[in-house]
Image (cartoon, rainbow, N blue to C red; front, side, top):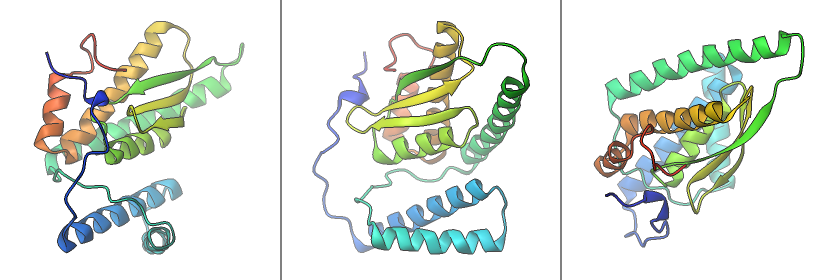
Length: 202
């Protein structure tokens, strides 16, 4: 029986990062911020890319982030699968929210759902929260760094079965992110604790 990764301490001592590791982490942070900026604008253009670069550099200079170690590496095919799934989810969520807005009758019900991630790292928590926030109908209310739990406000939830389905969807999203950029240890945690298995922390 595997241990619950969410209960592992997050403040373990790490050796000082080398100059190469710091530069790599800064490059990854800038790339991620530019990607989020472009997604928020909704248009891939040189103006948005340059604007995102300026915003990313200013944010990292004025509000320096704590050192977040990127322990994995980019896996091209899983990364492609992540983006294809994300674009599909974006279209489906947009259609669902549009239907709820135009539907005649009672206003749509909503719920606040807690989803505990299996890989409790700052990077995974941030990327999963960002991806969820970009999907219409879901909004991150709080992220508990200590337990690795995301609290999400979700539209169109009517019963407990839909709550559990959304929670499994969050864990599947997390799995796609880890498969795309995770380390071997993070991949092992995901595979030992599949989203559809009873007892997965959530």
